[in-house]
Amino acid sequence: MCRSVEKPPQISFEPMLVTKDIARTRVAPVADDVSAQYRDLRVNAGECVVLRGLYGAEKSTLMRMLFGNYAFQKGAIHVRHQGAWVDMRLAGPQEILAVRKYTMGYVSQCLRVLPQVSTLDIVAEPLLSMGEDEDVVHDRAKALLTRLQVPEKLWSLPPATFSGGEQQRINIARAFIADYPVLLLDQPTAVLEAQNAQIVSDMIMEVTARGAAVVSILQDGEIYQRVGTRVFEIAPHAGEQEGNGQTSMGE
Image (cartoon, rainbow, N blue to C red):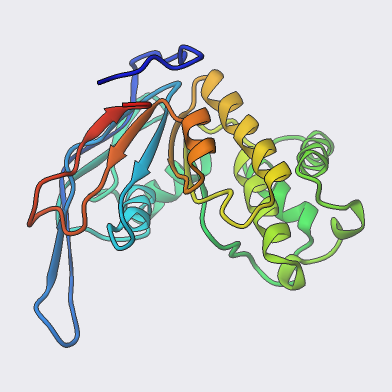
């Protein structure tokens, strides 16, 4: 049974991210190798697909495969990049880096950056690497940090000693500073208090409204019901059992 959502999503039905028959084998040290297979996923411009599944269902593993961090042995992940399709399994390192630079933003569960780099420079770096004006980029970075309630006294400091919530807000600002056509969000609100989680949910809705294709892992039921347009269910070791598919939000 499908239930209508409060706001009709502005979905263009132009695919931006498509997977086909992907499977990944993990070598287990003391047991048989574990093979995980995933049913096909298609994410269109202007929608937010929420990955759902029990603990151990390898949601974050799928996210890392989409971003090109994890290798997989079968199938294809196609990303629409500058008017052409790139297969992330077959692409070389430079092509993957180009996809990440111009097309696909990623919020991981932990902020991983070079030490001794200031918070402001960490957030600004994606746009600066595209050749954008430094003053314009820094203004945008400051606006994002202000919106995410990162205190200005922290902007000139490296974030290594910041709290988990502060680091995650910097992580989010860095991913949202550029208008990426595709965004991958791995539990962006997991360590945030309610007010900042609400701010991030607003930001997710804004990027989908401008036409970004978003794939997210969201544990907060209220947030994923608010921002998600569709659920993609993942079952653990889906190659061995049924139950990995897609449903509309509110089903």
